[in-house]
Length: 166
Image (cartoon, rainbow, N blue to C red; front, side):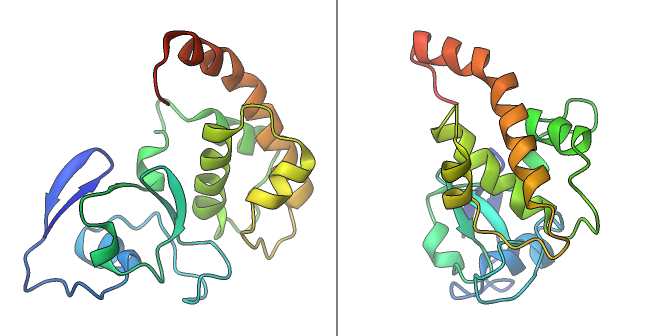
C-alpha cells in the first residue's frame, strides 16, 4: 500500500500492515513517526490527532484503508526546531505544555482550526479543540491559538489575495 505522509510517498509492504490496522500504529510502529501519541484508543482524548486531507482526524480509530489516496500530515511536519510553526512558538510563549503528552494532538487540532478560521473566537476554539489536556491548560491553549492566529494573519491575507492554499 502506498501512502502520502508529510508530503512524501511511503510504500508499505503488504506483509507489514493490515488495511484494518489503525493509522496510529502504522505511523508509530511501521514508519517510526512517534510524535503522534496513543492516549485512549477510542478517539476521545485527541492525543492521536493528525490531518487527513486537511481535516483533524483521530488516528487511533482510523483504519489504514480509510487514508489510501489521501494526504496524511503528522506533528513531525508542522514545524521544526530550526523553523517552528507559529503555534509551536505561541505554545512556548504561553507556557502551554506541562506534562506535554497531549501536545502533538492539540497542536494538530489547533493548526486545522487556523487553516480554516484565521480569527477564531473563544467559542470557535472551544468547538474545534475537543482534545483533552489532563493538566488543564485550556486557558493558555486558547491564548496561544489567538497569538498564533495574529502572527499568521498577514500570511493568510497574502494567500487569500493570491488564491494560494495553506
